Image (cartoon, rainbow, N blue to C red):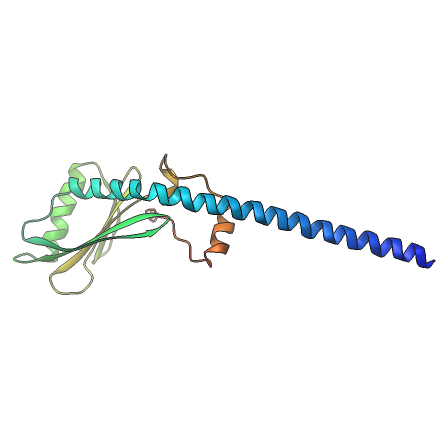
Length: 178
């Protein structure tokens, strides 16, 4: 083989390789720009998730003798409202029964029924009730399915989000228990 032919082959391989790198870099850049825009739109939508969670909390009556002592929201993509209660003059069974009667009468479905945890769902809402071992205290968590809200921003590919969030991405939603 002549030297000029080898040079042409290596040059062609090199140019194809550079072209692939440039195309990958451009695609990565465009996806990253889309991701940054998504984060901005997600931050704008965050208060809407909080409002949905607070609206559910306002509808659910607190059992007699239960007193709220902590109220916070945590964020991933979407929002989880957590409210901690102390209770007096009641057992956890009485607390669970109170919520069971309410949710049953309001058309919610019970998705999980463990000794210390109950999960109720309706439409895209998820209400989790958990007795977590601290005497006379329980936790209420409320969240909504992130992907089923009209105001959820258009996302870049999920794998791209997870890659840039170190695979610790969380999207609000109710676990599926059958």
